[in-house]
Image (cartoon, rainbow, N blue to C red; front, side, top):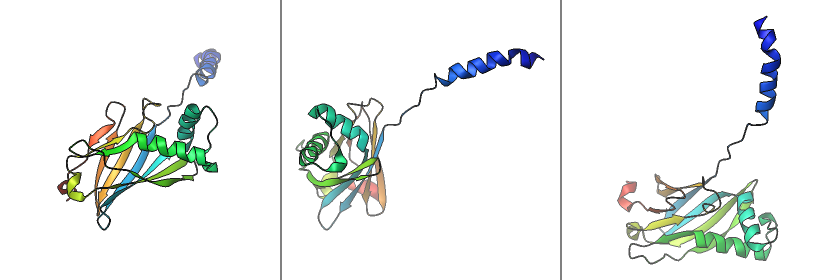
Length: 173
């Protein structure tokens, strides 16, 4: 009898609680960097939310941007955004020139491809800056798995730490 007496209160509590449940979005991008010995190049492939990139580019362009449609102006805006938020700096503080390869849309994600010509020995003392989406989403975390052969080191980038030291080549042994 006690349960039945409190049943209307329980139903009301569940009904009102339903409206207060808030989803916790996850802001994470992942990527892989392969160092290619034949070309002395670090090739990066980054998986980023296409919707979030479009929102940033739309705000900057003050018009709708749809990356899947591959308009020249949208491609240029994406290239500029990525290359201004992704870089490698040598120990002497000079930037390694980035080579934009392109992007493709796969379901809800954009795959971004960038190369950095860098000798393996000169990776020591370098820093990578990966600030993509970090200004827009305070909780954004960007992760890049650097690969030399079959050895991997993971770099994590956040709002407070969007530039991190790259591991020395001997750290991959």
